[in-house]
Length: 81
Image 1 (cartoon, rainbow, N blue to C red):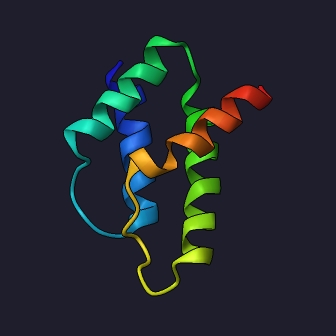
Image 2: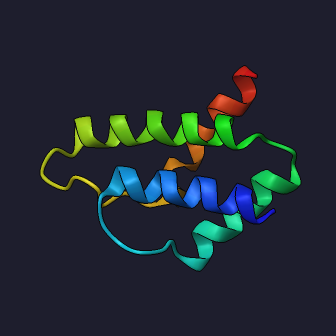
């Protein structure tokens, strides 16, 4: 369980290049994906896709994206599996 959280947390923070931890809401989302049996790899792939899209459409605010915003991209990645 902890490895799942740590893997996703480190991935998100590396993309954001800021902050030391995620919000309680972010951890709740991660827990939901884990409880559904979604692999960390799939979650990270969706996060990366969403992050790239966010930076493309918000170039003046890099790294200011929440996991709640990225949720839709993760859900799309889950559906592709």
